[in-house]
Length: 108
Figure (tube, helix red, strand yellow):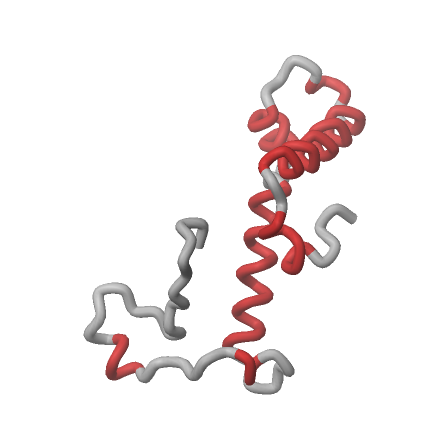
């Protein structure tokens, strides 16, 4: 439920909101696994065999981008700039298939 449509909203989360979401997951895990009361959050995640919500949101965003960027049938495919040719990217140190957008902020 917490991951619903996360590719749209997760980049806009403040650090406090990320911590609040992780607190919800931490609480749910502690309810399900009663023995985790004195364990750290990283240990609890390992015990439950899941990843943090932030890591899952990042992974889902990457999967969404790959499905959009490399599938010409996707309706969003036309919104992306054309990808670079293989002959050009083979000579670069950092070979990105799509051009990296220039921004005025240090966040991206």
